[in-house]
Length: 108
View 1 (cartoon, rainbow, N blue to C red):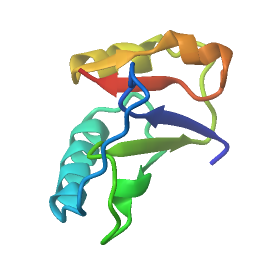
View 2 (cartoon, rainbow, N blue to C red; view 1 turned 180 degrees about the vertical axis):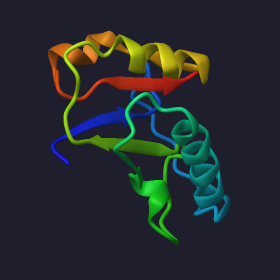
View 3 (tube, helix red, strand yellow; view 1 turned 135 degrees about the horizontal axis):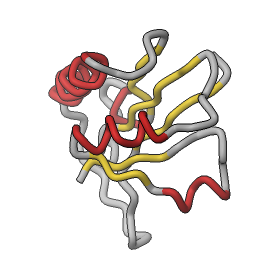
């Protein structure tokens, strides 16, 4: 997969708090993955748990990072943006200037 959509929690401050590993992080990811994949507007999609919460026994920011892999990112991503809005995500357009091929969302 050559394109990706990155999900993360957009932090306003630089303070990072680490938590002890929580085995529920995997369950939380699986739940969110199922919700996302139910009606995602592109059928060929890979949904992966990335970041520190995906590594067993590692202290981590208690934020589930999710990346979607697509064969090709459409020129018009508005159906994707609108879909994620229905799931409670906010599209962070500012990141388009940094990594235009990776739309960025945060769960609100």
